[in-house]
Length: 99
Image (cartoon, rainbow, N blue to C red; front, side, top):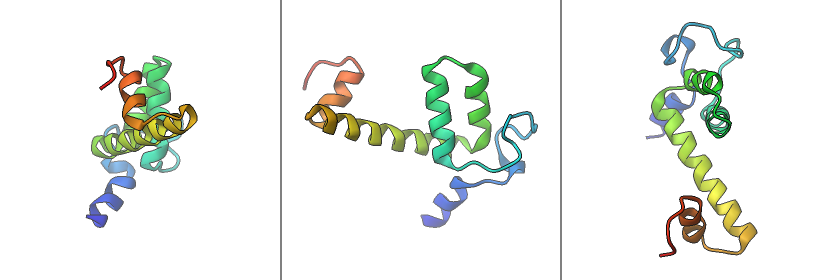
């Protein structure tokens, strides 16, 4: 399991989704958390160019893992800040009624 996670965390440029070398930061490898942060921020700002760039940094599986981890951490931080449960915060962010 840890071997698979390490593989997902850093892939050689030749194995990235977009191996074209067109991204602004292709001179170095990015980890899944950098990719997730860039991807989510770009989605929030509706910036398709930055979305595409962040998607090219890691595999789709790694990006999905990073986005999930970012979501979890964000919900926990907001729950602490609001003094609410993570479930309440998550449902609120998604516009769902209280459970």
